Image 1 (cartoon, rainbow, N blue to C red):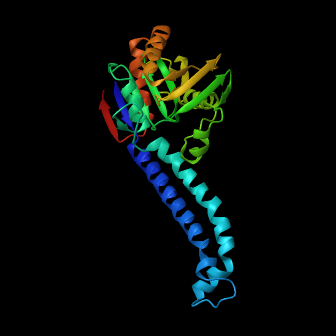
Image 2 (cartoon, helix red, strand yellow):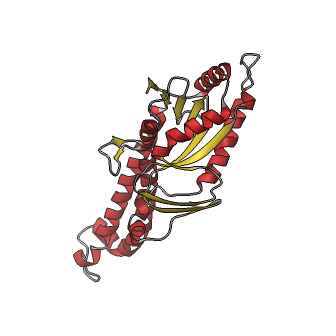
Length: 269
């Protein structure tokens, strides 16, 4: 499998996440220090300097603002870090980013298949004899219930205490539908292709992939395929048998997407 990664974009968003997280921690620290002002400078006593006088007057407001602001910044940071930073995955010694974990789950396909990470309108794209497959990836652990088009995370104490460190479930089916539309529009823009190749006819499909081995899935009539990481390879094989694109179409498809993609790293796996 050929792999094209937009590592510049991945690194940029990881950096954004770390900066937001550090800023959030800094704001929370300021709020904590503000709560000590009444002890350090009791009301009615004269402040030793202008800064102390300002803190004495506005400590309550600073503490009140710092708590929600710090959590908001920390939450934004966690959102980016969970999607773009390398981490250790449960039941594994692997330290990798989500895009790398997804690539590991597809290891073994030949060069007829191409994997694009953050280089196309859809974040994770696989093209080849299977057509175009889009993957909406989630990395959180815990219980997840899928009923038709409804995606829920039942309440738990563990989820409550990690609410600001979680990626969030959202609605993967809605994300897939949105990304399918973008990829179909991209294929429709293809003009320089062989006469016997019509990229508009290439099927585009999507699935939700849960990378964390500790996730507990309860699935009932989902509108899109719901997969664990170890099911991705079999899913691609099934789609290949269903689609069976001609060799000329596969070559034209992979080349077109490569020319449209933004990437710095190219490798084979």
